[in-house]
Length: 357
Image 1 (cartoon, rainbow, N blue to C red):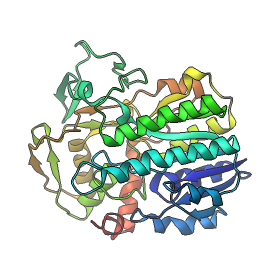
Image 2 (cartoon, helix red, strand yellow):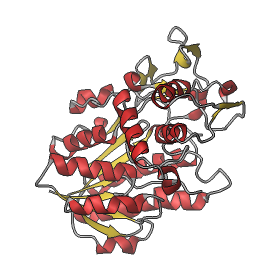
Image 3 (cartoon, rainbow, N blue to C red):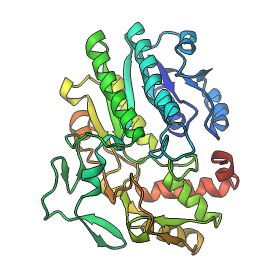
Image 4 (cartoon, helix red, strand yellow):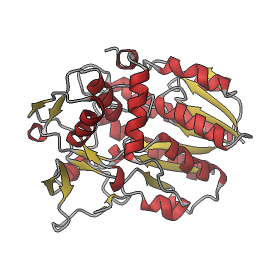
């Protein structure tokens, strides 16, 4: 099987490529990256050692895809993954849409040409912000938890947010580009008869994740605690109680492996959540406590600033992935945090290398 991974020198693309190559020795793997993300150049060497062919190209340019050979499948791991992208006053909304949506359109045309299976790595940010922000939560053990006795919106249970939860805007510009990519991918697959699968991922985390607060909060927090960099809890009265799950990209690769080599599901099962679930979830304050035990105490200030896209509790329910693909995450949150910590200790320059601005 010939497989193309986009954004292959990013954190997720790089980790998925390594894991798939280790899992399937006969897999002919290639990747494309535009290398504009700080830190992405550092992943080039390890991929080449695995015999992975790399192409320097930009998905926003259709002609850059013309250099690529025919493949059997495409994993789209290329995106600007920041929920603040295009609205933070520092980045361009047009460029966000070009990266995350125009690039997807060019890839879908490529898949149409070669009848290649298309696997899109999407995000929990395709789910509606307003009902998520209004969820009934309570404070317990330095974290928000769901008030299960209250009336909850459709698609939410103690297990988390499932695939039936609303995807109505507002989502954020980032979330909207990913949701639009999902819809176009499904339409292309139907119109031109090639397989399309969509994995809505929870918060991805692991060693080598680029250190930006808006893109890799676990790696950013651990690196910053280790280096005694300034940190603050923002919003929700500055307590740091907001909760997220975490998922290692190697677990994502195990799901993708099933999707590449297993039987295709029915049409209704093409969109699934992939997350670490409740067992991996923690608040920022709980993450800080872990860092204090690992590195020593570090002062974190509080800010009551309210930000548009903040939500108190977000855990994805990925039971459907288990039902359809027999998939469950294997990496525990403690293992993920420890892996990040060891990488941070071995790379004292990581924050500056991967987030120079």
